[in-house]
Image (cartoon, rainbow, N blue to C red; front, side, top):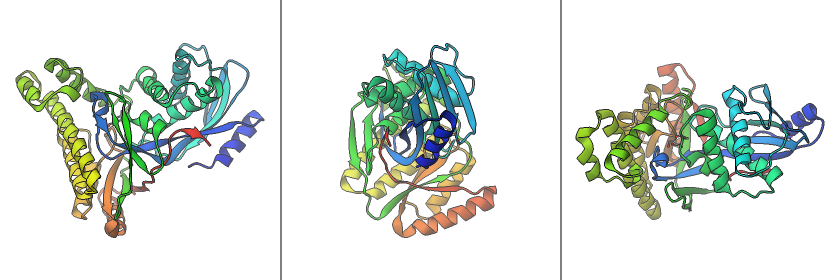
Length: 378
Ligand code: GAF
């Protein structure tokens, strides 16, 4: 987590008084990728890397925020109908507007924020930013009235209406509901979820960040969602969660090859999530890992959200005996998530660093995974 002392002192320097600190984390996802907006299951966990904000009401109708990591500031009035142009600050603006629409009387405030979630790595730094402000403003102006799921939906609505990414609920859900040491299985159709203690004896999870910038704003992410919606409509179901293999085959002739392959990936991923849940109950991490590789194959070949650098990282993982590896998150760059036997861990990290550097001339970033808590006052 970023040094809160530093944020407090920056706040004091800029605004001449004390503020209150809040944090919300990024996330990993073990399996269940691009299933959330298809009404399916996801298996995320919050991580320790977070966005932290020091916030205090200022008695006016003006919001003044300063992003330490960017060295940029922004001001807008609460009633402003347009909001800032910079995408980064639109996350804060959107959360303010959505909280007001949900009945929280947000007034002017000052804030300083920063974080340690690698940007563009597919670890949901934008969801963490939304959740941090949603949690903080609901606490300061709403007496904590809105529950965590409502706050997660406020973050998601911000992406949809103010940023233009038609994301599912996984990232904001994970950032709001994370619990130290546990992954969560969320049914994105019903909103029901369960905590799964994550203690894979003899194995470790580690992310390898390709540093290929993953950017969902303006990316083909929305096209993937539209493909799925077209297929669901043709089959006559609300989402692909309710589409069987038979139903998909029955409409194959009326689908473009691309839409067919997108839906084929989603149906396969639904099955894989259930296989992984079953394997986890039995402590069978080898099966978990095999399913991760299969997810990667589907994401690369059918869903087409991988890239050369990420495919290289997954191939290297396989070559080095890693139990499971795949691209994580929305895709188009970012990280791989790897399930590695402890005995192979050091060798894997050293080899992948070296081979990635010699192939692409880039230092990949190794990000150890520690499953942490969700949004909170700190
Ligand atoms: C991104 C989105 F924000 C999530 O909602 C989810 O669809 C994910 O991509 C893919 O599983 O992180």
